Length: 523
Image (cartoon, rainbow, N blue to C red; front, side, top):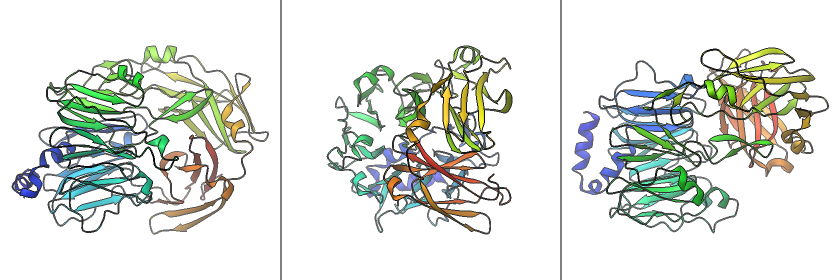
């Protein structure tokens, strides 16, 4: 039985009829995350724009025709026309370990490193990372739609009410009453669209203060009725009956960055609900901020437009643009974090994403990294490079190369002494290293266990530092492999010989608090 025929059968079920239109919207013909923007055409074929450095996420050549599409942080999934799940991309957390399904899937949604779906029996099926119990749906519940983010998953039940699951109940939606026909996670909160076209959002503002900065309450727009809605950390937006965009904002100044009043056929927020999607250089240091591509809309002519709190830019059907002007004028500021006498991570002012410069598509420039006057790496990298062969005294410079091969100017010198643990940019002390100099050692122990096809790494941290840690960035052989809030990492992708797994403790302000390397490939 085909995917489309199953949808027709579902329409005949009286319990589901009221919300089927909204569920179909979540199976939209486009989906995006910080690493990719993918579209699904009428024949079920997938096309993606992939951010530089993530080329491995491109859809496989043998991908079957799909009836639904969703993107995660570094993976993507869909539903075949036969109602079966299919995924591609990274598999560090089992994102590609699709389950065997006995009933065809009709709706699917990817979070950061996990995916959930609903089948024709209205049952939820989830796979991937479960470090926050975001895969553990309440037993026996039936759903019209599921929406999963990075730390929590929510389901729209048959009665139109919302239930959520996570090991952190502080994130559960408060003061949210349906019934709804569609829901959308909002970096910890939830918003819903009623059958009458009203938007309602949960209010977690009075819950434990540690959650409040992540989910400030935001009254939704009230100029409806609305035919669609989408929610992000910074805004809640609705589409009015004429297709015009209407939003409310955490910061009123962000209104100038949204195409208010323009007409769209549908709107959609970042699938992963990842709050820290862009790294920026602020007040002399690098930090993650709640920015980056937040929402995209499909216009009446089928083209796309995307926006965030800083700019509006064309989506993947926009025109092309060279990067020559960017390379010639972009100001590069550098900083570094010293891990040990041979390990240094270099950070620089992040480059725009590959579909967000000047309102048009452009090719991200190549970054050349020099150590002591010698070129050590030439790569597409937006904001950092890990040097596992640093010298005790190293001077780093970087420059950009445009698509014609013409280099831009060198940055000023970043001087690093790994023994004295000093970092100077243009002769002046930088902040990342000095702010962390007095912290105690983060990691107290690490343990590894070999699997048939990989390795499990577990670790413990100093109790004096534990409360400062938001999570752990994982690097395998110098390349980013994911982010976790558990004390466990499983790697089944990298050959055992020469493998080096690095665990980097990241603070709530996204400062690097410490690192530990494990494996035979670590120097």
